[in-house]
Image (cartoon, rainbow, N blue to C red; front, top):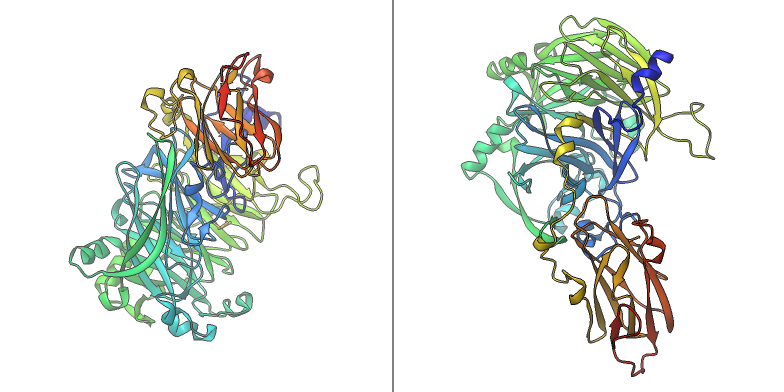
Length: 625
Ligand code: K7E
Ligand code: CUA
C-alpha cells in the first residue's frame, strides 16, 4: 500500500495532473476533482439551485433554470461530454445532461460556470446524452422513456397503446464556434428506451450508436416485461445522411415549446428564450438514416473504441460482451443483409455485424472505456469488478475487484481518439463497509486504479458528491492557464452596474427600490439605507469592484428567503429582498475577504407603509442625506 500512497500523493502546494469533471447524479451538479489526489476543487451548480453562490437564486441566474414547465431548480445529471476537435479534447466546454426534465447544459471551462441550458422537447427523459462527435459538430439527446408526442389529440391516449402511439426521439444539437447550442434536427423513432450512446470516430465519423432496451415495448413492470427478449438493439444512425435530408428540405417543422437559456458575459445576466418549433425527420419514411443491430440482452453501455472500428455493447443481462465491427456493419448495409425490420427500421443480422464476443467476462456488464493501447475495460455491476480485455483477440487480460457494484468507468480521454490513459476511475453505486457510516445513507464513492502496467492496481478510494455516473478527465495543462481571473469592470454592461463608489445610490420606482451597491475590501457602498417601506421590493444590485483574482464578496441579508449571493470580481449580482417587518435589518459580506471582513456590514431601515421617511443612503458617519 505504501506504493499506492506515493502514487496518489500530491505534495502540499503541488497541482494534480488531471481535472476530473464528475457528474453528481441526483444532486444536479458537477464536481471538479483533482486526479490522482481525489481532492474536490469545486462544485459547479448546473441544473440545481445552489445557496453557496446564489446560482438559481439571484435575479441574474434564475432564468438559467427556466423551462417550458416554469422554474425547475433540480435535475438528475448523469453524463459529461468534453468538447473535442479532431477526436481529441480541446478544453473549451463540458456538456451535461438533465435526465428528468430533459435538458443539456454547457459549462465553460475557463470560468467553471454553467453558460447555457437548452431544454429538449418531445422527450420523455434525457438519459442517452450528451455524447459528442469528434469535432463537436453535435451533441445528442435521446429519450429514455418513449411517450406519445405531438399535440393534445396525439398525446391524450391510453397507456396501453404504447406500440402505436409512443415514440422515442433523438435530438442532434449543433454546437457553434462560440458554443451556442441549437437543436438542428430531431429523429422520431419507434417506441423503445434509449440508454447510452457514442459517436463514431475516424472511419465511423458521421455515425452515432445508441443502445436500446425495452424493445419488448412494455409499459408496465419493466423489470420482467422488458427482459423477455434475448436480444435488444444497438441503433446505428447515419447523421451525415440526416444532414443531407435536412438540406434537401425533407425535415418537418413541428410546434414544440422549450426553453433556451444563456448566460451573457457582458451583462452577467442569463436570458431565457422560449423556442416554438423544432425540425423533425421521419427515419421510417426517409430510409437510410437508422439501422438496428441485435445486441444481447438489455444493453446499457454502447462504446466506440479509439480507432472507431469497434462498437461494444454491454448487455446488463448478457453472459458475454459483443463487439461489433463498423466495417462489417457498413458491408451489411451495402449488401442489404437484413434479417427483417422492427417497426419499419431495417434490422441487420447479428452475426454479420459481429467482430466477436468476449466470453465469460463477468456478470452485469455496464460500461466500457479504452486506454488507447488496444485494451478495453468493462465494468461488471453484478460481479463487482473491472475486466480488462484485448480489443483484437477479445481475451480477458486482467480482473480487479471494485467495492462495490461499479457503474461507469472513466479513463482520462477514454472516449476520444487519443486516450491519455494512465488512470482508470471506477464510479461505484454501493460502498457498504468502505467508509465511516453516516446514518441510513452511506457515501457514494470512486476508486482510482493505476493502469500503466499489465495489471490494474487499486491506489485510492475517495467519496464523491452526489451519485456519480459518468466523468471525464482532462490534463490540467490543457485548461489551467486559461482560467478567467476576474471580469473587467469597464466591460460590465449589467443594466444595474455601479462602476465606482461615487455612483452608488438608491432609487425608488413605485414600490421597487433599486440599490446600486458596490463592494470592495472591506465595505459596501452605501452601507446605511433608509426610506424603505413595508410593501416594497428591494433589489440589491451589488457590483464587486475588485480587479484581482480570488476576491469574491458575498452579500446576505437577514430574512431573505432565497439565498446569499457571491459576486465575482468585476461582476454584478442581484438579490431580491421583500422586507417582512418594520425595523432595522443588518446585511453583511459572507466571504472572508480580508482582515476586516467581519467589519464588512451595513443596515437598512424599514418603515411602515404609510411612513414619510424619504429614501436616503450613506457611507461613513454622519449620514449625508
Ligand atoms: Cu449511471 Cu450512465 Cu445513467 Cu450507467 S448510467 S451507471
Ligand atoms: Cu467582503 Cu468579506
